[in-house]
Image (cartoon, rainbow, N blue to C red):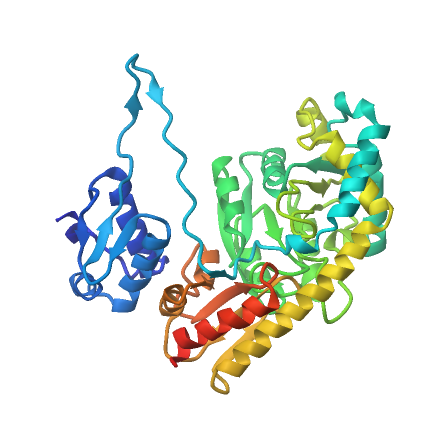
Length: 468
């Protein structure tokens, strides 16, 4: 059968369990593995491929969770139905395929993207929206391409007070999410630019840059931030960094590394730094370090931030700060685009910040998320043997990395949790290269889970990793 043709390459950077998952999923989507086909048992498949049973088990769990397979008790794993070719109507017009349903949710999901929407000040926001709509009927007309001037002024005040930045409203561009603005930056810097990305890091940016036809090189991260020796040796002309709280390691870039990075940018014409101020609002042990952009005197830093983390993912509102030199180029090439965020939402956010609601909301969220972080760490330590767990990256943000010393590799850790109804994320998921596939480290976001549910989830993790 076709699954016998599967070939896994241990020399590749991608973990074997992910190679197997991708290969089987591709054969199911193409129809090579038809609906109802029974796959070999985990032990048989492992023997055929020459891999561990844990590798097959984790791949099967991922395929089950995403709807590619179904499991019959005491029978095995079977292929689910998938569309294999375009359908047409009687008139010969293509029929749009149905949207693929979201994969089944785990009972407990430690997703890094989750926030607690229950702590959002709904009543305050509702009152502001009513007031804005009553007082500003002109918001139904076209606005400024860079966004509402009132919001840009408010953001400048916020950045001066909280991030040590002195910028003008004219330098601020508002857009519908960091991904959208990242795409603009890539086009702004030119198709021939090579981008250096942190490793591990946010992989969606890699896809955005690739889709624009640009080259990407990976730069390892150490205890002080992006590796400068690797950057100097690379062909990168622009580097994308998260200095306040590196994603996903949680490393805060040191002062010395920040200055070295600025020196690198100043050393050659055309070099740029893209500073994503990810999770800078959530720091628990000490005050946030000022933004890298505040140290920049040569116009070498493009600053990015979003409200998707501090308010809610549905707020597709982000902003970037451009240097005067880049602003001139932006207005030449992109001034004819309309702002991608509605004027109404911008004015609501402006009032929300100006009246102090945003600061109060952040204070409440910090207290809440810190308590959840503490609960997660305490419960994990309580259920594990002494010295079996090591935590990192938890001094800020809304997730932490847990390294487990129980003899299981990353694939086994993730798979064992899935079988207990708990989703954790292997560190290698955030890597383009397989430098961490066998580090036995997982990433756990805690912002979206109440403390009681964290305790319940950790009990299941204890069974998965250390038995009863």
